[in-house]
Length: 533
Image (cartoon, rainbow, N blue to C red; front, side, top):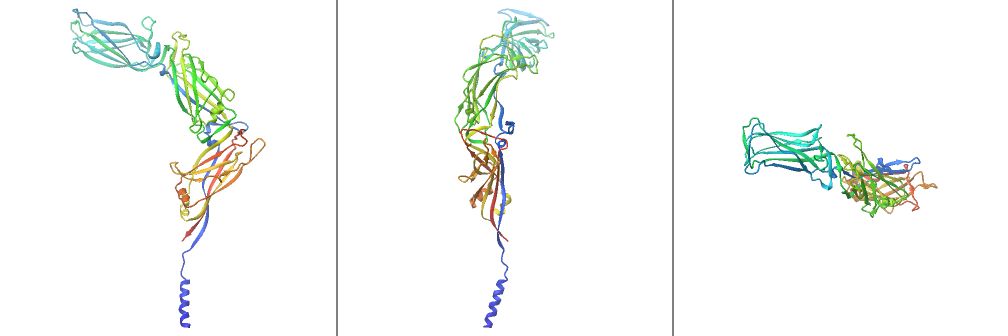
């Protein structure tokens, strides 16, 4: 017996002394996302204003449209061909050096300006004259091309060009471009009773170096003068009774971009439309349509004063100061909850506003006696100014906020997780319950997986006083169990999008939103994981 016992004891001692690998479980709690949402997160800071009682309002100004002066006055590229055949067959004429042939003295030429514009005077901001000359004479000449109606510092525009000798079959040719910027052009003709008319003059001087020669029948003197890319700085005349049509077009209205769905029941709102006429022209205008566009809601057409009916807009006043040439005529149209359906228009939460408008120039005709005017850089424009108190009832409003989501520091632990959950602490000071949905996003804001959803996603409201104002705040804890699949999504996620839905209580009564209201969110990961060493 002793012989067998000793080996057994030795064997037990050997195996009892063998070192085993340690293994244990541990718990960890770590924040993965934080967010604090108040109304400054939901609307651009520059749009929110606080009243003395802490209530908030949206105040914004935005351009609706702008029609520039070059829409009214465009001087088309125009070529005037000047041809002079000196004699009828079989005439001839002997010319000498220094002889002058003034073949088109004070020639009137007319511009074809669109839309019935009858121009009396203009100052050129930029543009060129393209002058082309064909010399059929067998002697060198000097051609002088003048536009007597165009003056700079009271000196008429005149260009002299040396021309080599040519022949009738192959006339000598030269051309040049002349900058006409800052020239003042008189379009009233020789005796001032015309419009769109300028005076030109063409002359040929036989070169002093020439020899006597004969001007024969068929020796046609020809020039082309082309006005190229003329942009007026100023124009005066009669601009006719043309009608300007603006739209239909849209302008972005990004005030409610963080509200992904729903409608608002507003108590009040005010919009002012400032129509500003910087043209020296009387207008009769009509807003044919003004619409609130939201792809998820119905289109709401604004009704109210001057929508669909005409109103007069007076002409601007010239100042004589080139730096600030006009005093605009401003027409203000006011829309509110008393004279229009503006609260429904704004409550539709527009993403853009559609408009169409027309304006008839000079509805009473040429009452100015050819003294309509426009200046470069001026316009007919409309600007919208809105004031929206944040006191409203909310119907299925969903707000959107996106924040960073980061579990990168927990990667080693996550790979060894046994079990766990996410814990969300929500601190709410809004005077109504909120429902919260959380969606994990990748680096390109593409959704990966819904992390938080109903039905157990309600964030409770704090107590309110007799005026419906929150008394302090209230904490709500939400627990979100996760499995291995959710863990993989969490590892890929870079952001989390929170969708906060709510309906105000006691509808249709409105809630006043204060600058102290907010929702604080702290999302933590609470899990157990194994460690092997």
